[in-house]
Length: 92
Image (cartoon, rainbow, N blue to C red):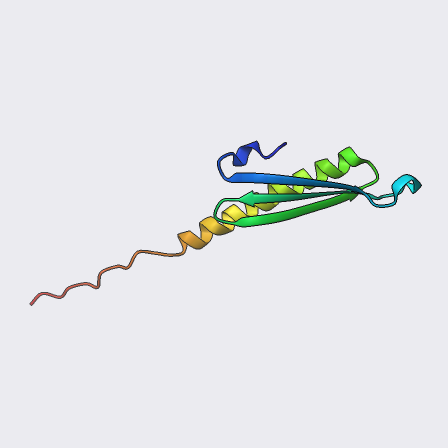
């Protein structure tokens, strides 16, 4: 599905597709991805396009970038915690 690079971090992915206007056409094909990411939680990505396959492609593209961004933030947050340095001892 395009999220293979996150294998081991991504759990369940739910895909919801909707044709908002029905046979009337227009930019109305809606794709919503609900992605479970370890240590992050559930993320939601959406895209709308007149062509269903393009809506899916855009939602997957947004998911790739959004998951990567969340994992970077998680890494940066953890990286900010620095071990305590011992205070220098002053021997006589």
